[in-house]
Length: 313
Image 1 (cartoon, rainbow, N blue to C red):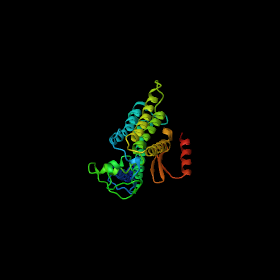
Image 2: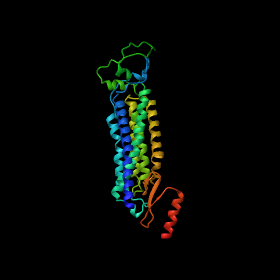
Image 3: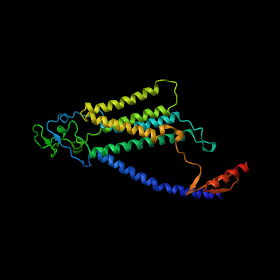
Image 4: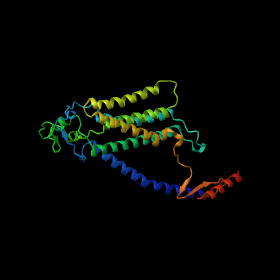
């Protein structure tokens, strides 16, 4: 009888997962569409920035990207790979699990890797959505704006131009629109976020190794990647220095908040693990050891069950 009731409760629990999963999937699709439309420059600029004719900061020539958009996007996949490799190599079953809750090393490592990967992905996507929103509502003219846009006005002296139309037909519409979305730097934010998350992850999750310099070397490479990627945006005349600074700050804040609040400082003991009790609304079904299933819903009932367990023992 107890087994039948447990199966019914399990079926109810599984059926409840459908709606949340559907909602999460819908949100994920909407966020992905927003990021794609933002990156392709298909969303209109809310605020159209004007410029002064004598502004030398927007007269630079575009000579290409040292770190392309494809490269920075692919770099976002590196943490996923590193997390899965790390958990596969160094995972050990938790000593807090009972004999009935033990799981294979392979399954446990996959579960841990999936958990930390979700935390990383959630923090990264949240930060990118915020950066994309700021670019649309604030934006700023890139250092190569005049060379890319080629506005249909004649600049004289210190005149301020607020109404203009870009006439550059040699470049794609995406690239021309992107010339007005300099603030903040997405490359800087993403590279710094990746570096902070992985440095923190390696420091907390990798056990002590016999080699002294393996982990510090990896952490140094990650930090150098963030610095190089950020500085290249200035030398390539793709961003102003304050754009890069703002992106770096955004990446630092997102990285620290994800590691501290999302991952709980990578402390596995603070994770909420699934309970072995089957829950049906406010009642829990447990086995008292005598073969009878008892439904409890109040602290008083719990004390009675504990007392019965002591007597049976």
